[in-house]
Length: 399
Image (cartoon, rainbow, N blue to C red; front, side, top):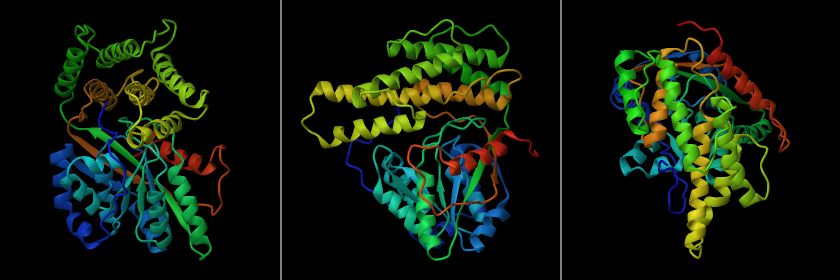
């Protein structure tokens, strides 16, 4: 499990409020050098910049909501922000502010501020709403909550970003002002030597899993064998037995659901019917704070709580492998994405998919209604955002 749980009391980290410093640092040369050296991204192309510019010039409060396939997404979007002649704020998980002072300084300089994913972070919410209400600058948020590591899929959304947008919209509406959401589509494309990169990754996977190299020359089938072996390994680790009559996707979903259900019954008395992202958030919010705040927990209960946090980590891993992603004539991008994802899940170390280029597309503005949404019911605002993102990701597009 990667170090996403920070074992010290949470404190809200504000961004640096300077606009000239991020503007100065976000020039094309510095930005492209940063992407190339740290993320192996050799080109970025932004489309629909005029849509974002129009909303900014109109004085709307602007929320940018993107799909989240890579950890590099916020850095990539600065190409769009530069072309829109703006700066931005970006909500980021608190664990990213605990990876050294330099990393924290860079995030804050570029407008990043923290959110506590393991609890209700009123400070982060209030800051977001306040900045939108004052129309300081656009705010970037990722409602999937964590990286999916796949271009061709969307994970279920958390409702935090739309809650922030609706709250700000109510306040701005009293002043006769609008709040809008621009869905932001982010797509990565591999541009290197596929055969060399694939062989490097798949060999590492097979070594980690201690399985013999597949004799099948079809890369997608070779990856599927490794993915099945990974699932079987995790089933054994969490005392689960896969149903031989289930498809590989059903086995992954069952594993994710069963480990979550066991934790939910323990802490809430019943299985949740929410989507996987909200189920994970609820368990972490219930289990983790006590580990920090209650010094009287027994060693047995502490171990139990950590084990349930590991269950949420496994559930996200399994649920974020899309169905039929490698079916048919799978693209080299999908093959490399899943390969890198498997290796990351085995080693807990992020793995880049070789040299890539990125396309960013700004979707049409969605006006945020100045009304509260009833709790427990599907939010039509989320549905609109998902629809535009799905059209951008899966619909026809120019290359």
